[in-house]
Length: 258
Image 1: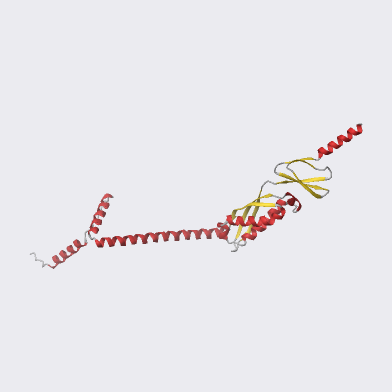
Image 2: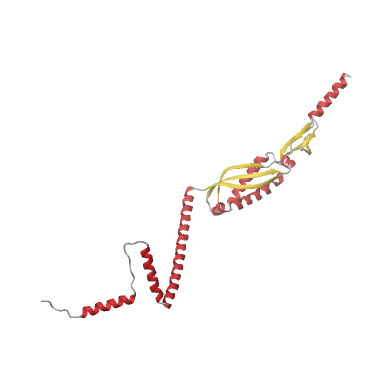
């Protein structure tokens, strides 16, 4: 009788030792004598003690930062780039059977993909189209990791560093572009002003009295600014008449005074 109780206790302990619990975000890949048996979890499940063993796999999204890598663009400019990858395991069985270290493998694929994609683009593309390059990298990495049961959800490039000499050259180029844009704006403004002056001159020629009104307006504006000197613009007819009087006076004979 004691032996029977002892046997029951041993059986209960063996059954209890085979109980396992997997969280909602975990799955257990169960092997029996070295062969794949099943996928268990989440929740409570049981494995045969001493005959079966398990490998827990986390299904949550993993964020991995690739160390800064130096690569060369299509136009032979060395750049240093840091890449961040977001990925998740969607097939626990493949992630355990097909690859030994899933995290290290994804990082290595990201490194080779980074060098390949950067080498096909110029420096301007790398600086301006980082979002598109991130999409291209995600598609390439996802295609390579698909046989491992991994889904790459996002790839971002950050901390793009270029040589100091190239930074100075880019700054000079940007300054030249700004100066060119400023000159074009100034030239457009002068052209528009010239067209307006031409239009105003045409209106004045149609009505000469408008010129006198404009002169009076200018005198009023100068006086309103509290200047100490006031310039009065005389009509050209007055100037011509004054010049004629001066010539007539010069032509008169001078009297000798004793």
